[in-house]
Length: 149
Ligand SMILES: Nc1ncnc2c1ncn2[C@@H]1O[C@H](COP(=O)(O)OP(=O)(O)OP(=O)(O)O)[C@@H](O)[C@H]1O
Ligand SMILES: [Mg+2]
Image (tube, rainbow, N blue to C red; front, top):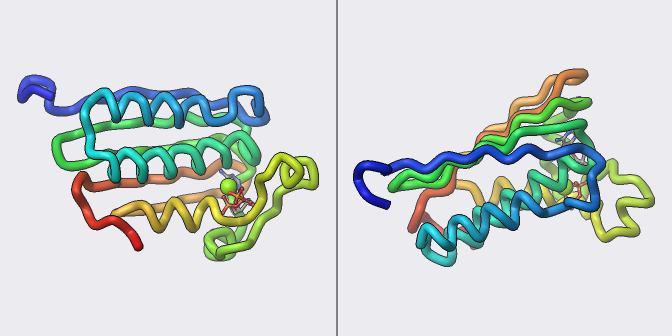
């Protein structure tokens, strides 16, 4: 990126329940970050975070906007959904906790690892949820930041 365009931004809409398009936004984000020339570990972490966040919108929310901003030092992803919200955020962040339906589990989802994985791969992670309104994830991945173990 040149100094004149030191920050890149793009928004991706995601529709709840749209399993046919599951992972499309995350895939585009991954390709985009590769094209920009980001290092492989950062691309990998951002792709995991984007995929898990996108799948949660598809499985649990009605719709969302994923906002990707790439600046010289970091990748910033905000996922703001309109949906049922999460009544107990701490519980939702617990490994293995899932409210996935039998159908979702048949598709291979519902291990209860999405949010813990997002948190593990983020350098900064914030989750804000309101029952009856929706959930907002705010994630920063620093380029060449520490690679989580
Ligand atoms: N955007 C969201 N809106 C409403 N509830 C959510 C949202 N994201 C997560 N949850 C709730 O938090 C739980 C845990 O989410 P997490 O992503 O960790 O696991 P999962 O989606 O159930 O399974 P996995 O991600 O491993 O396929 C979900 O089962 C769901 O109850
Ligand atoms: Mg999930």
